[in-house]
Structures are given as structure tokens and as C-alpha cells.
Image (cartoon, rainbow, N blue to C red; front, side, top):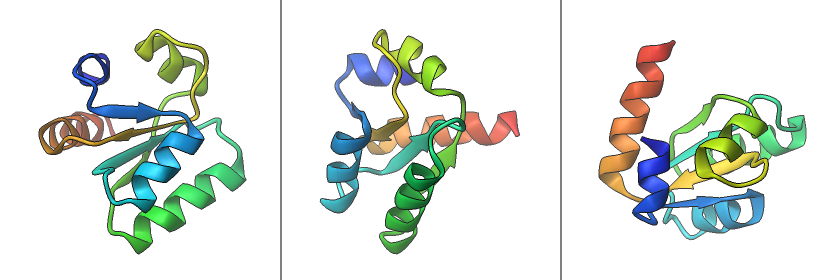
Amino acid sequence: MIALCQKARKLVAGEFAAKQAVIQKQALMVIVASDASNNTKKLFKDKCVYRTIPCVEWGTKDQLGKILGKEMRAVIAIVDEGFAKRIGEMLSSLE
């Protein structure tokens, strides 16, 4: 589903782009890799909590990169409501 979201250009990948999407309130969901640095995790959790954006810790940087067909990515932000809702449902069912 994440790859489909990327194909539709409804996500941004990478720390800088995701941070900008969160600050501008374009992001509707943020996924942070579980092996991202503690500073990165805290930064995005704090920014998302302040703006009431769901922030989920899932996968590794390598997994996120492979899903997107790119190199390693620590953070991705979903900017479409439908994709954010569906991906959130899928991630919560894994837990």
C-alpha cells in the first residue's frame, strides 16, 4: 500500500521533506523507521503530537527504502487522507 501511495505521489520520503510536510500540516500520517536515531524519533513524535498527526514506528530504514524503490529512508509522511487511513488500519492490524 505504501508503494502504491508513492506511485500516486501522495507521500514524501526523507527527514527534511517529511519535516516540512508536518510543519505545513500537509502530512496526515508519519511513519518512522524503528532503527532511526533516537533524536529523529523524538523530533517527529513531538512535532506530530503538537499538530495531532498520527506518528507510527514501523519497519527499518532499509525496508522503507526498498518499498519505495530507493535507498534507505528513515521517515515517510503520507499526504492523502484515504491512504493515511488505510495504511494506519493495516499497521494497527499488524500489532
